[in-house]
Image (cartoon, rainbow, N blue to C red; front, side, top):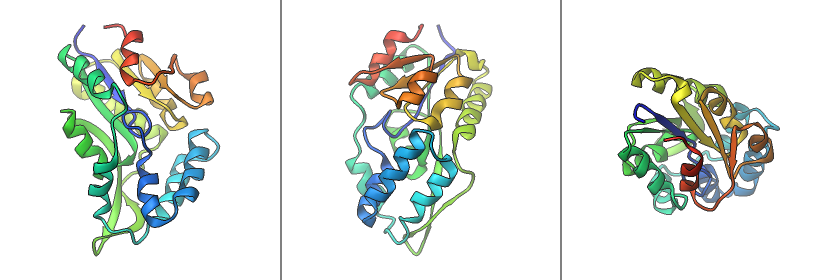
Amino acid sequence: MTGRLIVLDVDSTLITAEVIELIARRAGTEAEVAAVTDAAMRGEIDFAESLRQRVATLEGVPDSVFAEVLDEVQFTPGAENLVGILQSEGWTAALVSGGFAEVVEPLAARLRIEHFRANRLETADARLTGRTVGPVIDRAAKAHALREFCAELGISPADAVAVGDGANDLDMMAAAGLGIAFNAKPLVQSQADIAVNAPRLDAVLEVIER
């Protein structure tokens, strides 16, 4: 079947790490940021507020951090295989992330993915300001992005698959014809259409109708 879309969350889904925590490590705020990330993933704190709190701790980090983080991040085992197989079958892949475009965009390019949406970090004098610029990519924005991609492709959201692991992905999963929780928090597993708990991301191929 052609004319299908798969939308993937990035941090802890497409890649093994949480990028904001890698940046926070360089700011000396990793523990603080990780605690807020976990609370947001469990749905205990509003994502936009959690993002504001976490990004504020990054103020002063040199913008060279993006290149350093890109060297450090690793695709989840099976991620490249998943995207490659679906693209070869005529699917479009897209990335939608509550993380940062400065990292998501190069990752998308490596996988020949043209559609992506992510937050952007503000910089001044080659350092992070501790703020984001533009609209925050939160739960609602992720779902909106999925619908926008479908409209661009001329397909129904019912023909889309969304894969994620955190509460921030729930609206996107609900908007798609199939919402897959990948090694997700319990709240997310309980609300997704299907939960896939496996070491490799391409395990989701087993539950997608193709």
